[in-house]
Image (cartoon, rainbow, N blue to C red; front, side, top):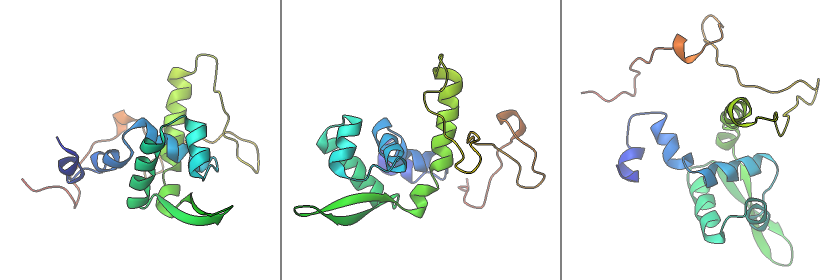
Length: 151
């Protein structure tokens, strides 16, 4: 299926994947959360080609995940900052980190994400919005919502 067809799918998993579904895009988002905002710094920290980085940044700006803001050095340049929509990706980033720590870090987590106030470890928990029970995939059954395609 082509990009244009995928982004039109009535699926709230498929649509975000059309924007975030390659490794470079999500690594740019990860670096933005780490405070890396300038093109040259992003390029150096990721080892990504300039053209690929420009493409990913343009896509993230186009979809409202990052915004461009000018900064001054010897000439006016842009830096990239997370929008509220971008900040909402933090639990997704931590869910990927939790999975990676559990299944791909045989020597233990390479980085601890600590709560600044108490020092505890940050984790993502899936819970029912009605009763508060913690959930796993075995506890959840998808059902059509108001945005489901009729057919």
